Image (cartoon, rainbow, N blue to C red; front, side, top):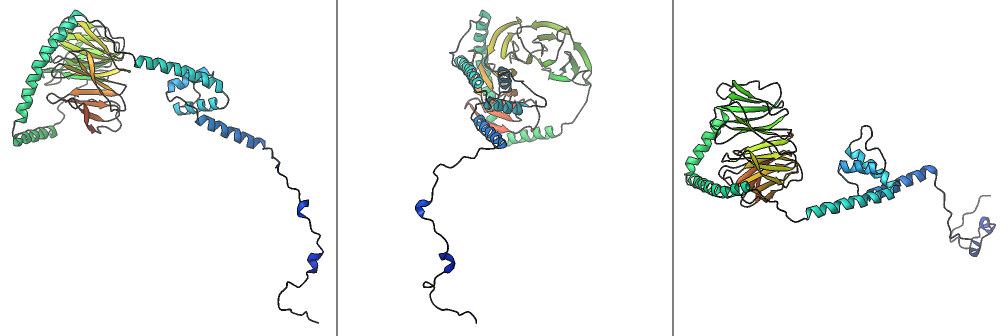
Length: 414
């Protein structure tokens, strides 16, 4: 017989299969309020410890100066470098070592670094100091006041005459200048010596030019046919930093990596004087517009002012935190500018013997600088590949020229 189909609600229908199951009372269920902790495996423990070490390492103040990083590694008795390790890898290795269990050493290193920082701050916050000047320096500064005032008046008169010209004449002069520059071409080429040429300079009359090389030899060449006139030897035995002619005569000045500065006479074809005093490499020498004074920039963090006639040192000036690389004099004769590897340039008042403005803006070393002959402007060339134009009146940079992309050294001249 077939099963019947019932229609309607199933509430009254009893389920025999569920009636056979024995129930459990709610109060009989035991709940545990203390869950059991599962012990991590060795691999998990290693991962957790490394993660905690990385978290601690991120909170550590690790120096960015590679020299300090090496000193810290030496302080915790670790190798200062390993095979194929760069500054970044060395810094990260120091971070890992300090975060993995050398907390006491880290605190000692911080205490030492804090002491050094306080000492540096005490030096930086010290008051300006003066040193006694010689009678010759006092006489030179008095003479500079009269000389610079006269030169500045002449420069202002020339600037007024230039600005009074009709715009059409100025535009015509510029067009002629640009056309002449576009027509520049190579006239002659000459082998300058066995070693690379490091510097060259034309004489005031343009008749000859001088070169200096890495071997310490200065050579005088004819500007007309590039023939060698004479060789100037006997003073320098290392790389010559720069050679420059005096603006008033054919006196030649040169400097080298051993801190020597030589004055040469073209008539006698020999050195007429030697200026000693720098304790580091002399990178550049520059004549004062009067020809009476000579400035020198050195790697001993100083620049010096010399009396050419007396062949004596007038002033030793510090002020840069790193090597002084370049130097130039203002056409008026009152100001001097220096550029250093600390990326800063400084403007100095020779009449007062102090810095009056700091050129801040370059991110790398200032390798060259020059004053405008008429306008209150100075240009600086840096290792960061830019040329900056500065206004001496507004004390502000006016233009930034992206001169080079990847050239480590270049010069600017106005």
